[in-house]
Structures are given as structure tokens and as C-alpha cells.
Length: 228
Image (cartoon, rainbow, N blue to C red; front, side, top):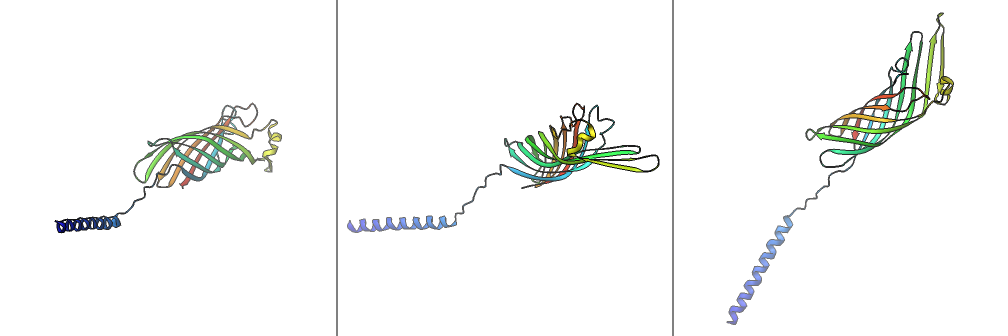
């Protein structure tokens, strides 16, 4: 009987050892896979041109021709839900401008400004793994920090007279205060290929550049961007 019990004990220990060996050999082959969390915020750097003019009752005959400027910005987009809605902000450097010509007289303005869009709401739709399209609407405020108006007139004898005013001297040109601050809304659509973006955005200002004038800025921006 004693021999039988000893043999059973040895058999039990042998089985335990074999099981431990199997578990050990299997655990060596198990690979751990790190689950990456989806990116929650996308930063976008954009650079392009800004076709600026002024519109309104006092601008239709004077300042409604566009002049090409520039726009440079950095923005972020943060998803609100997992169905494509996002919100974001934008900070940039840009221009507001006009160009006017009437016979022998012509002038143009190009002002450089800081621009901040404190809130942008949009929707991004993924067409496939590479292509996507988004639409966005927002508000902006800008402040002119530099700029010039250049005027040129040719008289009947062919003599040309030129003059220019910087942004601090616009009162001499208008006889009224020039408003360096602008604010308004923006509407845009963007096309995406992987990280690269082609963006079309229209901005409409609500503040008259000259006291009591019935006109405001209108800018059409075409920009290329890259997300990071």
C-alpha cells in the first residue's frame, strides 16, 4: 500500500511539472500588442494667397477691385464626437486690401494684420483611407499693424505724380479715423489627401474701415496646408 501511495505521489508531481513546462513554453510565444490611442487633436500649418477687397454701398465704385495678398496661419482641430464633428482655433498673419483704377488715376492699399479665430466649428467626412473633405464656419478678429496706400495720377501733359501713406497716416488721406480693427465671420471647405490640405475660405468683415463708411472687408483665401 505504501509503495502505491509513493508511486501516486510521484506521478502527481510529474504531471504538475509537465503542465508547468507547457505553460512556460506557451507564455514565451505570447506577444503583447500595444493598443495605440487615436489622435485627438490635429494641428494644421497653412500658407497661401488672400484676394482682398471691400464691399458695400460706399465701396461699389471705389474699392471693389481685388488685390492679392497673403495668408499664413496655424490652427488646430479637435474632434467633438466620433462622427466627424470638430472644433478648433486659428491664429495667423494676413492682409486686407483694395485696388482701384479710373482712367489716369489709380491707387491701392495693402495692410498687414494679426488675425485670430477664437472658435471654428466644422465637419470632416472621410471618403476613404486617404481622401477626406471638411466644411467649417467660424468667427475672426484682426488688427492692422502695418500697411500703405499708394496713389498715382498722370496729368494731361503726361506727368505722373505719386504719393503714399503708411497706416499711421491714413487720417491725412481720409480726413477721418481709420479703423485698424476688423471682425467678422468665415466660411470654408477643405480637401484632404492624407496629411495634406487644400483649403478655400471666405472671410466677411463687419466693421467699417473708415468712420461712418458703409463698407467692409471681403477676403477669399486659397491655402495649402499640412497636418502634424
